[in-house]
Image (tube, rainbow, N blue to C red):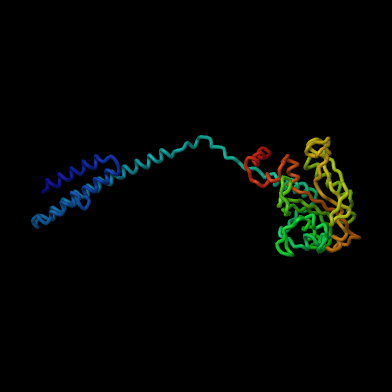
Length: 344
């Protein structure tokens, strides 16, 4: 019986040594220690052994079984470690190599223009203000001298949410809020960049676009202050050679009112396809704040005066960067936006 146990033990050792991988090792374990394995079969023969010899037989079988289990565990650990080492080797990287270049994003042309304007006017002592995009009819129209039924409302095809609320058609609505909210009725100097909405959609217009509005209210404000401010503004944005031309116009919230043209930056005023051979490009509206606007928002028009102007930021960005279609600003086309990377 001892010889039989020793024979099985040696045979098991040979099978374990010959196992070339974890799968073979598992097959050897099942063949030796499984329910139908050789060690299990050996234990079942114990009933045929005399009682006095059973303890000795059981001890010898357990010694052989424990040795087999130990040998299998050692071989299994060896193969597992080899797999781990192989995986680590395949995933090893050379940390001394230079890293791949990560493409960095750039500022959107609209954000560039907005930040440039804000920096300019803050340096001139202006406050940057904001207001709600969902506006009331009162602030969007009525407090800007456009009462219900005023024909000038037809100039702005609006998105009404209710009879009293609409998406603001102009950032001028913030002017009324500022004037009315200034309890001390002191001087005001502000710009208001932000989104506005009108029912327009073509190559040069969008149903959503950006405006910047400026408002100055103080004692003895005149057209000269307006003209000087606009010259600084336009020369800063479009170049020192930019010239301005004022044409009489009509806006309900200013009197007198002007359309302001700038000399064509493409042809320097000589005439080209961009300016339609005129040498001038219409860019913004401006004027002296209407006395009615001052009065209905709590300011005495006999004591205070002011000026206001507004321009489309989208249009200004198009002129500044030579963009031909306003829709390019909103399509998020990386091929278009990547052109501005080198400007950083």
